[in-house]
Length: 112
Length: 112
Image 1 (cartoon, rainbow over the protein chains, first blue to last red):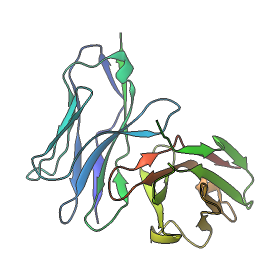
Image 2 (image 1 turned 45 degrees about the horizontal axis):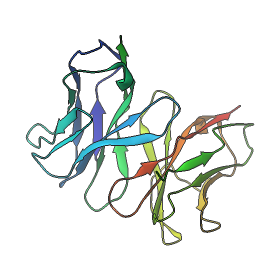
Image 3 (image 1 turned 30 degrees about the horizontal axis):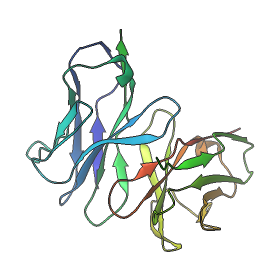
Image 4 (image 1 turned 60 degrees about the vertical axis):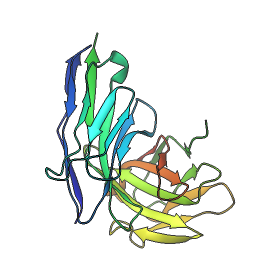
């Protein structure tokens, strides 16, 4: 079945450091891919998405490219801020279904 | 900005008791979902609901679980006889269609 594997956290970075959170997936057909973020005490918020191979999703300085050849959707940001501290979830939605399949989430802590 | 709300934020119950978790989806959305996350594990899909019926459910969603949209605004998840392993964070979500799902902040259920 479909699955998502996300790098273990927590990830601790200094402000302005480069961020990569790895996400790989297993799916049949052509899934849509998502990154969600959860700030303390809040719900999951969509950060970015990509619906087909080679699409790049971007938002708030974060980017992720849908790589079908490596079945990956790694999240990157060139310069993180303290306010980016949160839990980041990679997710996919398979063809013909509305349900999301999530990774375990990666906690990011950015230090000033 | 419209948002999904959930009540209560934290529910403590004794094993074997019934619990009802409540959600108010975004008002013009037609699709509703429940997910859960056991501490340290992945966010897992439980059920999706559309047009007053379940459209998809996971193997977790057994006879102990039920969902209902009792009026035009609420969407509830009932667990008839809670088990220790039902302790988790439960997330409600809604969507207009197959696009972005909007998540609530979650209800933390603790079964003693």
